[in-house]
Length: 273
Image 1 (cartoon, rainbow, N blue to C red):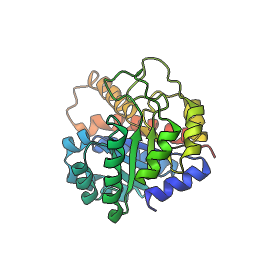
Image 2 (image 1 turned 120 degrees about the vertical axis):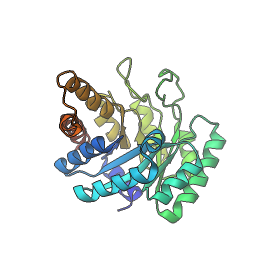
Image 3 (image 1 turned 180 degrees about the vertical axis):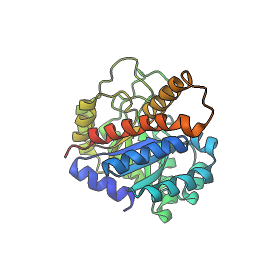
Image 4 (image 1 turned 45 degrees about the vertical axis):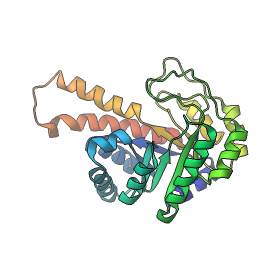
């Protein structure tokens, strides 16, 4: 099933897909083991920096081979694509979905670039995600404001034809300095103003009950990245202080297990049935 079709089906059922970034074989393996354990579909995300780190063809080949081996329903998605050349390269490489993020540009430019990506992705039958409003990225001020307005969302979706929209309702990328407070009433208004699935970026550290409430108010895709990196590296750092083992095949598995546990727990949180 195409990702855009799956997201539409989940929106109708007030359910959400988990979309989590992977950074190497180990994090990819942990994510897919959790999806298999819980028998849940999952979106595998690659950021521009991860693509540069692993290499586009290597990352795609590894992801597709791992998904086939695991036997789970999964899609490969470009997270926060910054330009149309990167989007085209990812589509050519076999991505199922791409995000073009022009949210820091003026509304008109965001509309123009997103529309071009939607048109570009059409022959590939790929899903296209965009972002509207201010969702603080790593290192940016989390109090920047710039919430998505329902009217802007309605206009943006109508003028671009985008399949999914990341909205600014109080979340931020990275860990939070203070407990986040999602604006659920605003989210509800946006959901009523737009016919497409809505995306929550910056879910790391958002309380479970708040995530579940966001799903009930219109979120259909929940992005996770920081927590995945954190649990893997925290466990690995602890192991390296306790052993002189140089065999990576002995050191990495316990850190992979931490990723499995995290992703499995998130899949349980998102399953409201």
